[in-house]
Image 1 (cartoon, rainbow, N blue to C red):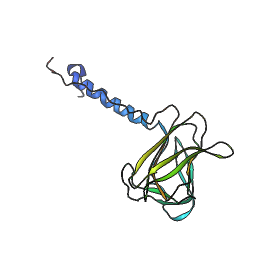
Image 2: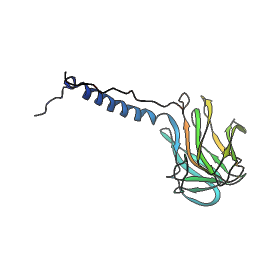
Image 3: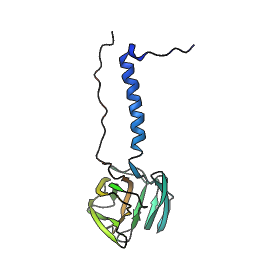
Image 4: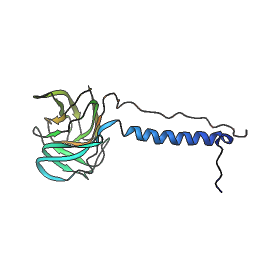
Length: 197
């Protein structure tokens, strides 16, 4: 015989069950915050500099990343903020163009280089040409996170281009317009209490 559990006899159990539901809900919402969330680990390896495309998830659909003078190493080691797997972009000529997304709030990349003081441009396509948004500078031998608030509530194509030297891109996250990459949700803390009621 199945007996219904009365949570109101044990308020702590009611809180625990509520917290589990909240965590499940937050996990679902988090996946809806981004258009692109890539760590390169599922990409096809490309062993020499060349022009390649890679199909990735874009929201509920898919799109193609376009690479020029790039190498893909999906199991390459990582340091600092970076995760395993990377796209290596050739000095000056390397281009990593992302598929079009419906909107953008923040663009986030983890990047590392073989030496200190490297840089790369983040650009957007304006319909006829590529427009500089920012230059990520100070890229060094320890992986770091580089972000830029694009804040465009319209279809957008972004790319990384003009690396000052060989640059390694490990992670790419493009947030939907209206979603902040810096917004960290903290769960409420419940002080334990005496359950002898």
